[in-house]
Image 1 (cartoon, helix red, strand yellow):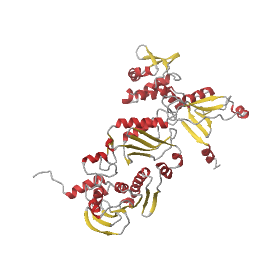
Image 2 (cartoon, rainbow, N blue to C red):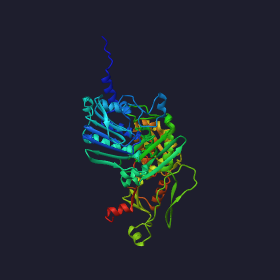
Image 3 (cartoon, one colour):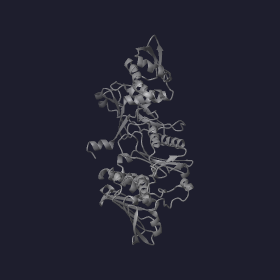
Image 4 (cartoon, helix red, strand yellow):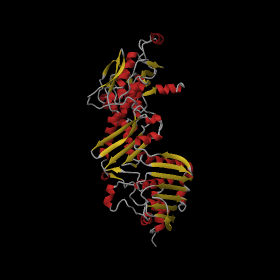
Length: 549
């Protein structure tokens, strides 16, 4: 007797349904996509018990005739494609013809629809058709799902709390609402309103309806069309470091998980500690993207991924870090001068830094010969701006300057007047031998004596180190593990070890040079390790803290 058996249609149906519908949120996702494909302008969603007891989606789309409605609950029935070749030209959310059949297989399913001529109501229980009757509803479709996974207890027991499932549904609704601003989305649970997105004429207005002011005001729009690719979206400014929940990636308005696109965005911002806020929609001809990867349709693959990655990186760099600015300090004030016509890579403009004033009393009390800068606890540099105040962390600012300098090959090595002699441990000496060629590229040069004794002879321009820094340099490089061969990772360690330290007192000229160098950098807002460099306070924020507004 054979051990291998062919599964019954009932078992096959439940297994297939489980691939498409894993929880209430995935059922809502499929129903929302059907409503959007049906050109709905108003979609109402209501759930009970986080969707475990009931999920209801009601729309005003084009609806279906009776014949289409009956076919719609059959597996692989779809109006979106007919042949295999059609998969390469998909312009709709749905196309596999599995959603309604999968939902009906594992629930009490009720579909009520009208194409504007005749209404139809269909009831299905666990995949078995129970009845087809007339309905008097207006044009559109209403689908009600009850007792999800009633016949699939193995799947039901893995659902989480009602609150958790509701949160997932809320995120699904938001995800589709942002990229379809012309559609009115209304979501509630047991009659209690949760989300209500009125229809608007742009994604920007939809963003303003939901996200707080601090996020909205930090956003910069990108709209780049290059060949057959359009990159559209909103990205936070480089100096935005607040926590948020705004990370949305779409391909042809389809919400997707695309880890490499996400990493590309982080890399463009040079991997800040807190990721940037963004909503990104990449529009490309359907034949250049594969959407038929997973039954849930939330993964895609570009046929020329590297090309898209390069375009996205260029678009972010050009717009977010778009124009070069230099802080030019003058006796009459500190003004921002834009360099026009410079062909090299552009950078983002930092707002003009202004001197505090020239009141003699302030000069006498401060004990300084200038009011342009203040050093707080020998660690932070403060300066007034047109709209408020900026605070710069001197260590990470210098770290950024050194890092960009050595990565661009502008090492400008300086000979030490008093070379530093070190006797390395066997482990440190091993690291030294392995990284010596890269360190030489950075302008760090050594002479070797007997055994494990070396002499530091030169450093990159502006670097400041002592014996402990150099010893710690090799220890820290050793901790990189497999990344020890990466030039950029070693540069981060070198920049950190050779930068001005917290607690180091600086003169006015030193502070001025530091700020000059910082805002000449490609990214003056985060250090190579992702920490913020500049914190900005507006006058409105200060007034609010003091209760003025």
